[in-house]
Length: 241
Length: 241
Image (cartoon, rainbow over all chains, first blue to last red; front, side, top):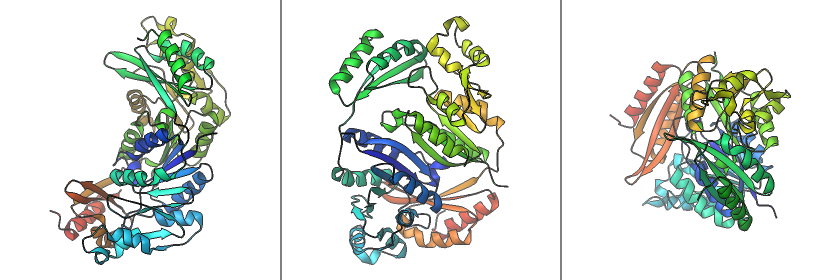
């Protein structure tokens, strides 16, 4: 059976302006790979209502899961929750269970929840909450769209809460062989190996160092024995110990 | 006049599998911001012909520029050039000027260009070459789509060649104020300031450290005097020196 598929939607002007270097994409990609959920696409859009709605609706019909990061805080520029609700055509309002979760973040509980913080308890109708062990304001899932914070520590904590509830697939295993030759020298024989092991994904990733160009050859697939066989062929072909 | 707009398309299974951490998005975002070209969207897609064609065609009609990274090397999994040609419905073939550029990478020139390396001289009909000062295999532009390598050093070198030829806009200036209070405490007054300076973009970016939560408040806009005025108001409001 095919693995579940996923897309990620990163929401944030700070990424597109180059102010902030995204960390969540790399983290999510690794976590999903370990679970056998295939991340197929990532989009980064700005803090713009129409763009968020279009991206959510474009991705949620195409993939089994959509993971979003960013834009669910208490400030005026946090517009993700409202626009996820708009994408689904459902209502959104302050919810008691979200207020309860949020209140645990403050020594004096609900008394600290000012009008701004109350925005973080606005949850689309029927959504399931995602626990936030760091700052308590929850994320949420509407159908197959999982809405999480942009701050990496909080994003990661929400993923810790969410991922065990998702159906996983067959984890892809990979073997990487480093060859100290440029891609142009390995490409021909590598193409033959890729054709021989057509059910595997064989990728070639060049790098450069002060000592010159090299290539990482990565074999990926669900069949570990076959991956090992292809990697052995690669090592033999390119004289790698 | 509005600034030129741009999208980026990152092509590569290695990013989506979590094997490689993308560096080109952050670099491009910073370079474009300096030039007053507004990066509005980023997509990451896998090494899949249909996905590449769909993304190129989805983005090139929507933005003034599309910058791609990845998939233009000599190996079997480098399919970007063919699929950019397919997206435009134009031909692609080995081109003499690209062969000349490529040959300068090898001590014995064209004699070193084996069949695999010759793939790197395949250029869509009518494309303009983009110089590659590192490994010489050129990138290319078809209309408003600029096709570059995924290896960060080469991507950056190609940008160095390309960007001076593009029409720039009015660079956005920004001022960042660090406030050692959580977002929920600054959100109310900040919303008032954002409403007062409605022509500016005012963003709020929470962070957490072992000492607790804080918030970076970022004012962005083309009018430097107005940005300074809004930043001064923020410092005064939140008691920052």
